Length: 126
Image 1: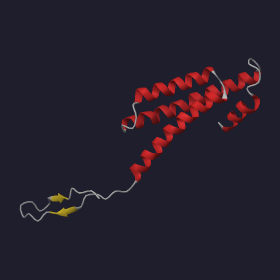
Image 2: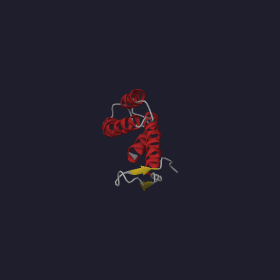
Image 3: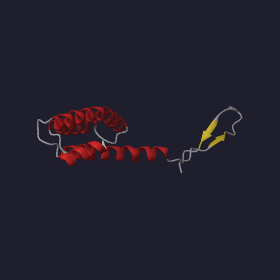
Image 4: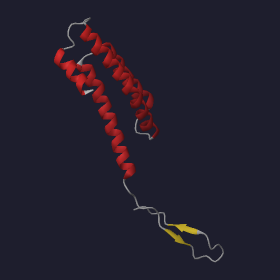
């Protein structure tokens, strides 16, 4: 997508209706479709983790995509990119928390003679 940003910025998309404008517009719209599937999956994962509201977030993202597909410009690209960056930062923060090691509860053999295979759990998490 970096090349597309350069093309949007450097050429100003040329004159509307030119072959350069049409080619860049088509490439941009294909890139948006390709990216939106993965982003919607990430939005869904964050919603299942209760980090955001799926419908609200998905609708906002859909509106940004629709606007960007109609208005092929650097500003619309940046709006979509900013939203995606914010969403991915939220996902990365969640992954970091999930990967942080935590101390499991202590497992100690019970001293009861009635059930030699029973265990007791220390319920304090450190």
